[in-house]
Image (cartoon, rainbow, N blue to C red; front, side, top):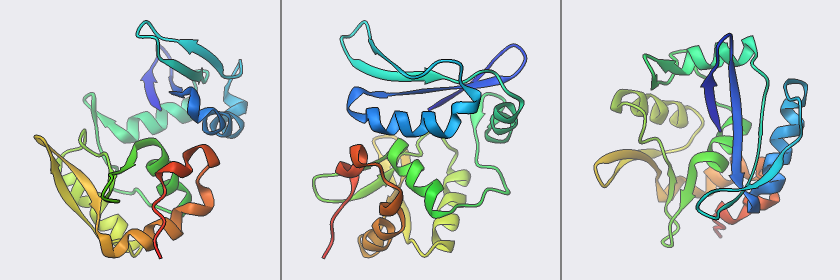
Length: 170
């Protein structure tokens, strides 16, 4: 998902791999009132098959853009609250698991202080996490002891096309 600042108001581009068609359709249904045409498949110049749609420019999206971007950089708003659905969408969009079943939230574009704020917000949800250096940038890593709780929180909201991201724990 990308928020794009338009001439009058901002708009969203929802763009995922064709494998995530169900997830794009889910987002489309949620945002349908702000969309003029349904998602479409496209092939990029690199031959990648994608599935995407755009919203119309809208003041509500501009408000989100203004809350999450300052001087062209992503930020975490001071009043951000997390809930199970927002964490699940965050993980479906920007999360990953490794072969070792480590779970990450790719937060590399946020400042170190904003990432620490995210750690605090996760702790409020009962999720223990740390910052993990990925090459030269940090990202959020869910601690092994919290992966099971993290998965229990998000799994009811994860679309079947994104279930490959879930870590099944005993």
